[in-house]
Each structure stands twice: as structure tokens, then as C-alpha cells.
Length: 251
Ligand code: NAP
Image (tube, rainbow, N blue to C red):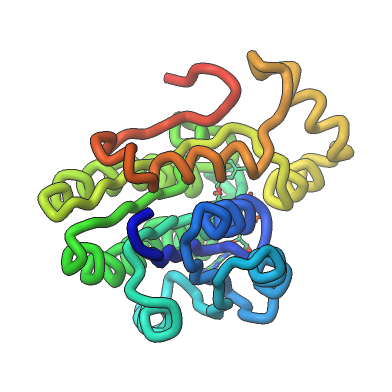
């Protein structure tokens, strides 16, 4: 990297987001670690700073435009203008369609779609000014349809359209936008799914691994490595793509 660049990773207190933030810090980025609860980001911050990296924790609800604007302003003041954005924050509110509440639909759309929109709109001002930028959105294999996830699969499919549109609009400013669609990744999100369906997590993971061509479930580091590549200098001709990181093909 020619000069130190600043990245923002949302939902980076734990799980996939934490792994991405730590990896980008290793790659030389100063990282704005954004999550609902600032104090909850402490572990991620310590992992980065104890290895000599630069990071700050910022508490923000990505579905609130006031929070988002304040968060991007703080990162800009304390770490420098952000030109890399990873929209990772996510929630699930699973239920079969006939039992899904209005609130569960709106909450999932709010975090994934509105959150990614608000963050991207705020950060593009810095990217276009710099004439360089990277956006990576976290989609999911659920975008292809998944029982009990009418809200989540819709949001994750929506993020793919959002990604392609960002790629079209921002390309002339040196900004690429891509989506990663993870398969089963070991995290609190999949642990919660196992609990909801009443299967011990170890059995749940084993069952999932048997269905995956590479015969293992994914780790947050698998996603972090993909982000690391997509935000790198040499990935500058890849834009508007959806990369399935799922241990096998998806269509
Ligand atoms: P996770 O362990 O549940 O972590 C999600 C993080 O996002 C949490 O720290 C959470 O904070 C934060 N968050 C939730 N709502 C937020 C909001 N409104 N504003 C700011 N932060 C918010 O999930 P994960 O498994 O790491 O998943 C990360 C991303 O990958 C998500 O977009 C998810 O949909 C996607 N994904 C995951 C898998 C998988 O198998 N795990 C597969 C495909 C896609 P709190 O703890 O305070 O709620």
C-alpha cells in the first residue's frame, strides 16, 4: 500500500466482522470497528492494537442515519478518511412466512439493506474524493432461497443488486464494489440457528459439513481472506461480482 488507508468494518465486535477487521489491520489498514455497542468491540480492538495495528471502536446502529453519519465522521477525524467499507453487520429473525411478524421483516431489512445503503452513501463521499475505494457487502447463500428466511434471503439477494449498482455508479471514481456470499460459517449466528432448531452445535456443524463438497464448514478467516483480496490493489478490475465462499459451487 502506498500510504496508510482507512477501512470501516460494520458488525466487527465478533464473528466474521471481527476476523475481517483483524485481517485488514494486518494488511496495513487503520480500522474503524463499528458495532451496536462500543464496549463490545474491545476484544477486536485489543487483537489489532496488541499486534501493532491501528483501530478505534465506534458504537453505531447501522440502520440509523444519524448514527452512521456520526460514526463515519469520527473515523475520519481519528483515523483518516475511510476509503474501504465492509458492510458486514447482520441479524436473523427467522420464521416461516405465515408466522413472520412485520417487525421481524422490517428489522432484517433495516440492518442489512438500509444499513448498507446508509454506510455506503456516507463513505462514498470520501472514496470519490480520493479517486479510489472498495466496498464489500456480505450477502449469503441464503439469497438463493432458504426455508424460514423470507426476510433474510430477500435482504441478501437485495444486497447483490445493490452491489452491482454501486459498481456501475462508482467505477469511474476508481471504486469497486463486490459481494461475498458465505455458506455455513462457524459463528454465533449459526450457533443460534442450531439452538433454534434444537440440535447440538457440534452435530449441526457435522451435518452441514457432510453436505459441503470440501467436507468442512467455513471459518471467519475464510471470509476475511476473501475480503483482503477484494480490497487489495490488484483486485481493481473485479467489480460488481458475487463470490460464493461456500466450499463448493452455488448457482
Ligand atoms: P454474528 O456473529 O451474529 O455478528 C454480527 C455482528 O453484527 C454482531 O456483533 C452484532 O452486534 C452486529 N450488529 C447487528 N445489528 C447491528 C446494527 N444494527 N448495527 C451495527 N452492528 C450490528 O454474525 P456473523 O455470523 O459474524 O455474520 C456476519 C455477516 O455475515 C452477516 O451479515 C451475516 O448475515 C453474514 N453471513 C453469515 C453466515 C454464517 O454462516 N455465519 C453465512 C452467510 C452470511 P450485537 O452482537 O450487538 O447484536
